[in-house]
Image 1 (tube, rainbow, N blue to C red):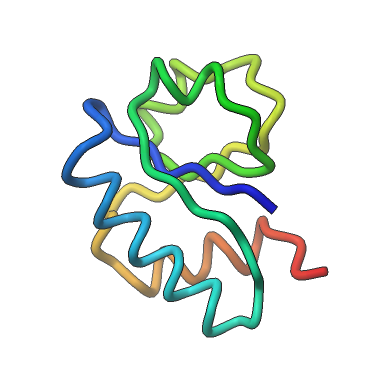
Image 2 (tube, one colour):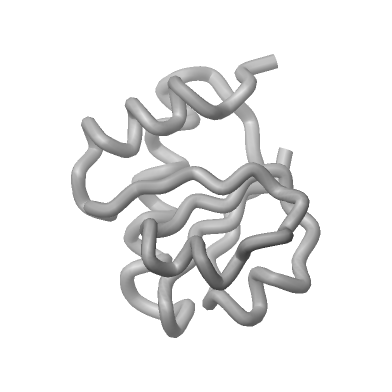
Length: 90
């Protein structure tokens, strides 16, 4: 499974989100390749899931990946809940 974490520039906050998503997936026993990037690059990368904020998700409309909204990239509870509700653990 491939997961992209996306922020506006693909630098700081998407990297923090990447590390938090990796931790949440690991704790759930879900194996995934997680990469961080910006919105324009994400639109051309094949992925199963894209995790980003609500406002940035608008730039990814039409992408075949399932878009998962996380508005606070530092909130592990929100990240865990989003993963539980949206990611197939098989």
